[in-house]
Image (cartoon, rainbow, N blue to C red; front, side, top):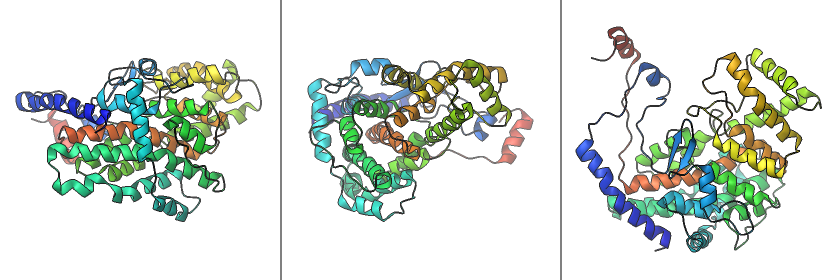
Length: 436
């Protein structure tokens, strides 16, 4: 048993009594109430999910295992010759809540490389799909195709409930290890005439992904940063919740994560980064070569709003300040591409848009989210096929959701089954001033 898996087992055994005690001794304690607008409006802000892996604070943004983004980047072991931590060290951190030593991170790297070989039939399936298939459909299909590899499904009938986490961990680790090659294959097959670049032994996930994509340094750091920033955003977002929901039926990691990817592909979720860049490119054309200034950007933003459209990449369901993931990527841009025309435009929009949206008065949060910045970096490093961007999001999101469902099985979380009501019932309760 690897040091990571052994430490994870210790953490699971420490945690189980806490969950059991809460259910047994305090199970009827009320932690929230549900209003009609929440019921109709997508269960927004209803506290009914549990995860210790990340928490989204409306003011501070995402915290991974209690650490904010700068603290996470500072604490984890860095890639050799890189500015950012390895994804492998982050995986250890998400699963255990502990900062790995360099030796522990290196062990995860070696473990991933032993798991990383993608079955040949996966590539055959991807080649058989129409070339104009959306890359997210290709990624989800590849994940689902590997379901026959699931150890959880194969050993389900012979495994005790308390040991479900073990085979879920194995499936999750295999998936995380294989996703970079699958994603890079989709990109090279679809956009580079099938000129596939094989993985290279000895590289960490970020460096190997950059190598397979055919993009030079510092894109290895871009990959590390991007995968970590997009890994998890607590449990209520569509991709995380979908993965958790499907896994709650004791579906394996392949079924569950494929479903999560299908949710991520929606324009109100992961696909938003694709739409944001498309809007920014159109915005740039409207300026007709002019240097972005507060005056011309403000006018263009008002033109967008007055035409009945929104400003993509601004606002968030939970956050009420600038998304720290946006800030982290902005800092990368300031260090590596400060004079890039597209970045200069995005940065000027950042200076002007909150004031315009506040003046308009129709948004609770006039600040940018992660999607407002992420596409600019990819475009700068030559990845200009922006319908592929959500695939990058998906590779990162795997880290959080697969760590979560491993813990779901460790703690024996139940089949998720909320109760529905009818519109007649809501109208009756509304007339009575609430359910009696």
